[in-house]
Image 1: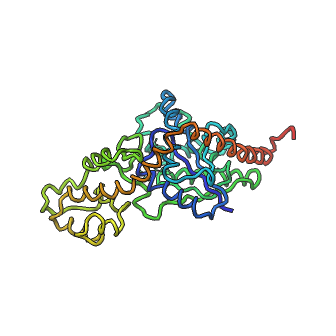
Image 2 (image 1 turned 45 degrees about the horizontal axis):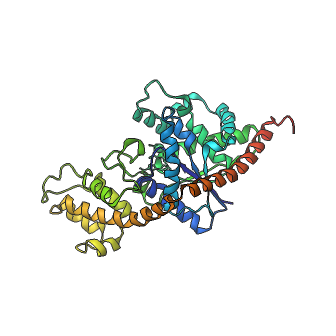
Length: 346
Ligand code: ATP
Ligand code: MG
């Protein structure tokens, strides 16, 4: 019995990092027919942990994220797509899990540490933000998910969830399921860097190509990308490693793209070798990357525009999904409370 849970924070439209890191794979898993249930959560309550003063941002991005899902082929007939805040059982589960985790354990979480630094919280860390790994454990375990397809930044969250599951099952009764993280096959996709070369393309850093970007936006953004800073003249030898343009090519380029857009080379290795020995300009590399991204994103953008014509239908889909998800979470909460012996009125 394989059950998948994944999700995204509605803090902005989804970007290429989400696409290669998680979305593309979700759609493939969904269409493989191999999984019993697939739950996809729009994590609005988690988004509020660092956006309490910006409710509108979170509200407005719920339909944006849902549109990105539909555009990438997630299908409500096959996957349950729901909104976190509409499932109160998740917050009740979190409350019990909080007693199984220490403050020092949360402080050691490297992703949370890095995010606290990135968001400039210093000593003013919202308690909700600090404890979001516990809330994520509630989200995953509520659906008894054993598979969680994510990018690399989520590995510490999965580890925290597994620890909570083990503590709970040992202390009370074996009712929770230990989940496995599933990373993309291609390691560059686990953490796609930003256009600016920052370690991660991230909505909060504004260094993204969004799935909804126009063809013109994509072109301009590719042209503005960082490359190898030492590659000043075309004839200079260049570096392909740590060079965002080549990292994106590693993530997106297939041999057939050369036949279609740049027949000078057969494959990426040949192109990289030319760049490394010198004589290949950044302009040519960027032009090629732009062609590939345009081809990949055009059908997504077109599907998105189609779904955007009926936002009412998108919310109806989210409402139905939320009702379905709540029924499952309620059963788990019931199991959890009876395992703990706090089902006094049964
Ligand atoms: P925020 O900046 O608000 O945290 P985000 O861009 O990090 O937004 P999330 O909603 O936190 O996006 O992440 C959703 C999923 O996408 C997670 O599984 C995460 O690992 C994955 N993901 C996010 N950014 C990238 C990236 N640059 N490369 C690969 N996967 C990514
Ligand atoms: Mg994030």
